[in-house]
Length: 289
Image 1 (cartoon, rainbow, N blue to C red):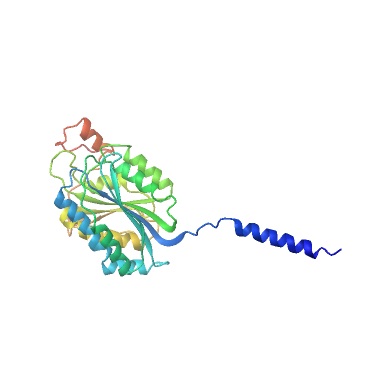
Image 2: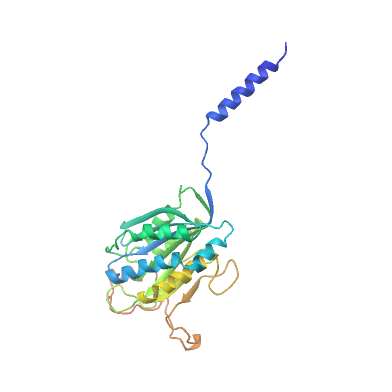
C-alpha cells in the first residue's frame, strides 16, 4: 500500500498547526531610541519651563537635525518624552514616535505643543534614569543605540543614588547624555558648575557627553547641538566611536583658553542630598567625590 496519502495528510496537519500559531510582530529597526527626560522641578519657573520646551520644539524640526536623521543607516529614529521632578513624580507626554523626515518631525512637535508646562517639587535624576530605562522594554522597536537624555538645572536630591542608577542603566547597554543648565544663584539646591556634576555623576555609556548651557537663555542652542551629536552618534571633540565622556560648553567661558578658565571642582554625587538634609544650601560645597 502506498504511503503517499499518509504523507500528504501529515504535511497538511503540519501546515495547519503552523498557521494556527500566533505570529510575533517584528520590531521596527531604527538608528536611535531616544528618551527625552525634562526637569520640571520647583527650581524651573514658568518662563524657564517654556524656554526648555521651546528648545526641543525648535531643535526637532531644525534642518541639521533632519539631515542627521536621514543620513543614518535606517534613516529614522524613535523618540519618547517625559517630564520629571521628585521621586515618583513624572508625566509622560508622548508614547514612542518614529521621526524620519520633516513632516514626521512637525507632527511630533505639534503633539508636544498641546501639553501645558508642568511644575512639581523635588529633583530625582536617579528616578528619571530608572523611568527612562524602563521605557525601552517592550516598545516594539529595535534601535542600534538606546539613549536617555537628561536635562536639568540642579543635582539629585531625592530617590536612589544617582551614580548607582546611572551604572545600572549603563550595564543594560543604555547611554545617558545630559544638558546641564548652569543657573547658579546661591539659592537652595543651586549648584555652581553643574556640568561637572553631570559629567561625574549622571552621564555614562558609549560616547556619553553633557552639553553645558549658560542659563536657560542658551538652552535652545544647547539642545540643537546635543541632538545633532546624539543622532549622528558623534563624540563632541573626537571622531572615535568609543570616546570618553565629554563636556561641551555652549556659552559659558566660550572663547577663553582653557589655561585661563576658572577651575571647576568635582562635587560628590550625593551633594544634592547633603545640601537638602545637612549642609547650608547657600554655602558652596567642598571639592571631592
